[in-house]
Length: 93
Image (tube, rainbow, N blue to C red; front, side, top):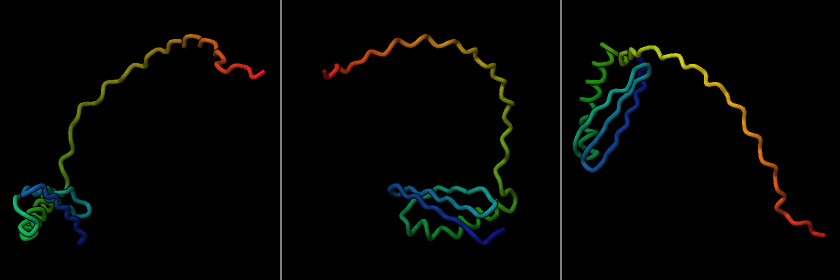
């Protein structure tokens, strides 16, 4: 794994959301309570949790979606003839 790590902290009042990501790994998200100092004090523990998750499963599982149903093209209807344009400007002379 690379040594590059990205940490994003979002605070709303006393609620904190922390996202941690390493190169070639999906991000790990954590919720917590407290001010910025409390969240930063807990970063080592969050990094340890994220690292242990990445060692066993660095990526989220692939989703298994059913194949999309083919869509039949809609027949095009001819456009109605446009009404003739009326010159709204009066002649000057």
